[in-house]
Length: 243
Image (cartoon, rainbow, N blue to C red; front, side, top):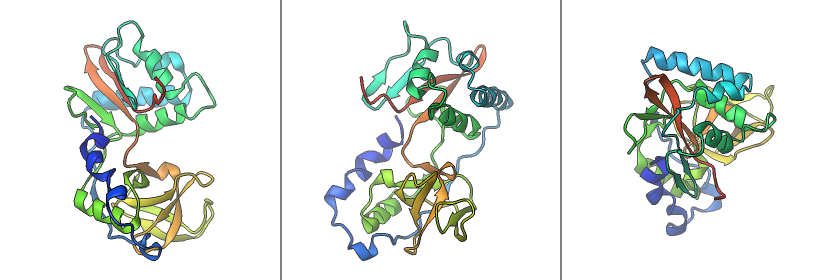
């Protein structure tokens, strides 16, 4: 299960069931605070993550493959969960899920972001498995109210990577800051504007933040399991839209 399984049934249905707010008020909403997951205290996990960070930075397929669980790898795809790998090596499934065969693709960047996340959370329904990113805790009725006010759905929401992310006046690193994102959910109007996400602040103002500084509330996850050989990549949640 992932966050879409926990809140999706309620939140995803909202736009079709509730009256849309008028256009003048759609960008205004009450801020929804978040509580971030705590970093893992396991030194072995930190050492494992460092190896994965280095492998991703060098786009080293062999090094990544060595960090994948030898047995039991799962791929929970959008079209259904593949059972633990038996005939197909887990490293091959991970490579397919992230398209690691393409050195110029986005998969290596995604793997690097997963590896950099030091605060995994237990995967519901999967004993001994933890995943990143670990989604923050927040008040679901408050998010539903914000979605109603903005005429949005859960895919239009994200949370900042830190508690002080600058909001810029235009999608450029040299642009003037107009606000700062704190520990709250944020309404995303467009996910990619030249490497920046266009967002709407609770007071109705809009601005831009680097896409690397916000994480979608519903997105892919990389999962880990501790084996006799140490921590290993044990599964992937997301992707695989085609059987």
